[in-house]
Image (cartoon, rainbow, N blue to C red; front, side):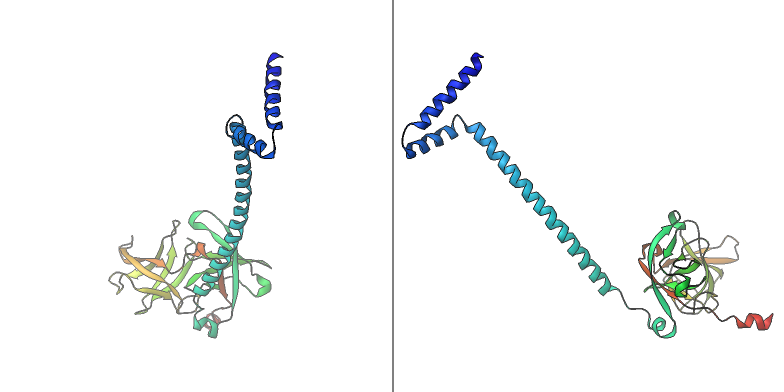
Length: 260
């Protein structure tokens, strides 16, 4: 009780000091008290005000960053579209095609398949070849009315007839479960070198001839000791694609009926 009375008397004394005198004298006394007795209190209030101002500035900056992020996203999208090379002239003149978005993935690690937003209602069929602007991507594995499944060339179930561009040396493109892609069934001593370009073959039952596949990066002897194989680095990383082109192409197999 005595402590509360002392505090009361102190504040009463200070009030009386501030009360007496003219306006100018009161301002001088108040300024003196704010720099001495009330300094810790005044300093705390000023710091709280500064913190509120900083919080408001932070919220404004967050909004500005959101706007900037959206602007940067739109700018990056426009740059990507400008940098994307046009489709192969052969594609646009000789083959009908559909542009499709990759909307989902299924599977684990290197055995992923891709879901496209085009299906049988758009004319997509099983085994239709799929490419992007740099080369082959894979083929259509199955379709539904609105969607289709793309199996990429790096999948272990995918096989494709390919050849060297320089001399038409024929081989079979296939990949292992780790995503390593090889051109196989090459006779020992074949004229093939690191850096050679690989394209789709006229022997392929899926793709037309001449579409880019990749380049030879390593040569090695096959386990059968009769053939050799070449490791291929594809021009396309299928699992990084956001959109692809489905060729509405089916190879003419009329010779099969005639020869049967």
